[in-house]
Length: 556
Image (cartoon, rainbow, N blue to C red; front, side, top):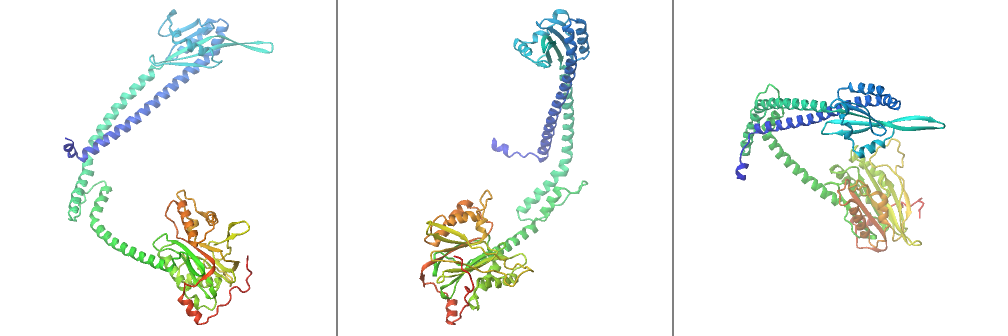
């Protein structure tokens, strides 16, 4: 039975018309409800304002009349209040709660039943009211409102004013006129809603089929043929109302075949570009050494590299030099992607030729790289870089910086038995950046004592700018704290510690930029297993490098 019900096809015309009728009646009902509520509140407020105004205006007169036992004055005030058609009755009681004067539209003489509406608890509340306070009670079934107040008189004595309660003033007014007006409004709204709904129903059946159903039926037929690989165009129906979304939908159907073919071609092109980017990534990774406890003479190196895209903009490398020295460099091209990777390849190509230079000096290398980046890149791509040469025999590091993050020098404080992490601070402009005010010596060179057991930690800004789910950055401060957390025997231990702490902080969020960091440690003994063909060739050629330590003040 349920299966048969599911196969019943209900015309779209009926569905749309039914939905419109439901929506219209629902909206009209909500609007009518709040409109009637607003009218009721306004009428109740007006009635309350008018009656309370007359009530409070009569209080002083009645107080004077009851204090002076002037019944005529009191009755005159009560008759004036009864001129308001919604006021049903008024009564004045003395302090003993006996009727002093009253008028009632429903009863006459001593048959007034106004006083019966007050319970003992309500009379107690009325007696506890302060002067000029009004007590109000609603009688829902009778559609009435009772308002009352205590009456007081004041006497002046020497240095004292006495206040006496002399009676009560009670008035009741009807709210039946408000209910009658609301009922009329409801009946009128129901009638108008029915008429409006009928008009919408007729209009829907007349126009929806012509404007919506028939074009959609044509599209349904065309889509079924397209599913059978019969790519035909759908004819558009002329409309005096101009084009609409259905016409746009028909145009999209007619253009579908072309779009599908174009999509297939784009997918092929996208796959080709993906393959090229993957190849560029492979080439990029081949430009960066994969060092993990790698011994190069007196040095041990470990590194970490992760590109933010298929082809990153970070690059680092090391070059063994004569006399057991080592040149270590780390750079970061602005942005990432294929252009950044191509620029790092150009920089790598230049750096591989340093053995043919007459002078190997960090500042000189950066000066020449500045030209290489400017000629190889464009105005939107620059590069920061840190370059340093470490001499294990002189126990000194000389370095220059092209606007790169200041690296850290890590060593052990023997006296305090803790790990010291100091920044190697030196300034310089970005590689490739054109500055008309440049001096001849664009990059400065500095030095620092570098003893056995000391480590150099260089990194790109990708690590300190890595963010967690709360958009907080890893920061230099946290990196420094991690480096100083414990003593590391192997450089790989330090790298792993930083990687783990970074993973905990970011909660494995994707990096927005390439992340690269390298640790280079000066060991006590030399390891001769690592060889470099280019270095051996130039050593045989007996090239002598100028001493870059000349005229340098060593910072200890």
